[in-house]
Amino acid sequence: MPTQTLPPAKVALGDPERIPQPTKTQRSTRVLLVEDEPLTAEVFARALARDGHVVDVARDGLQALRRLREHTPSLVVLDMSLPTLSGADVVRDLRRAGHLDLPIVVVSGSDRRQTNLTAAELWPGAWLVKPVKPRDLVALVRELVRDREL
Image (cartoon, rainbow, N blue to C red; front, top):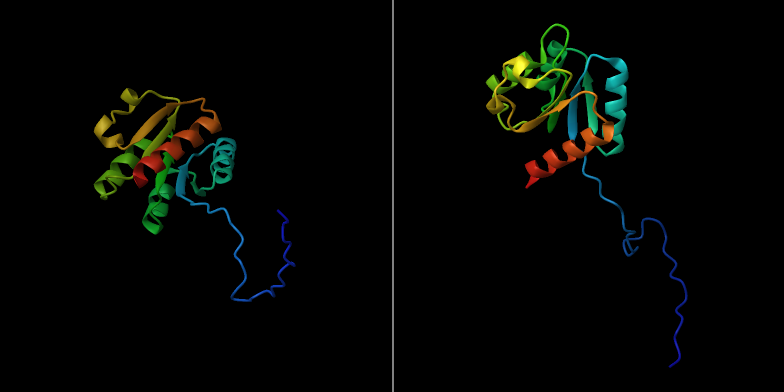
């Protein structure tokens, strides 16, 4: 059976009949990264940004609370040992302010029991003990964001 070859279509830019090209849709998530150690903040921020997240970095607890008042993120990545206001105080302030369903990923060198935070205060979220590989943080953030969207 012979095949028929059609001439290429001539389509001008802006032509309403132009066939749209498939595009990859990337859904971005706003992440507040609260970390006072500059190198750790940079490494985590780059890894999260490469995964498609919009990352806002705060260097201390008070700055984190200011940023949270400006824009509510989809998720918070939080160090516990921060200047001006501890990570535990940030968690408590967030929950008191009504951010009850905001996932918090704690990345800390300390154990949760040392902070006196309850599991209920951290829910929804997770606790990662340093050192943390950026890819492990990204995977956890992706999982928590996906769970939140369901």
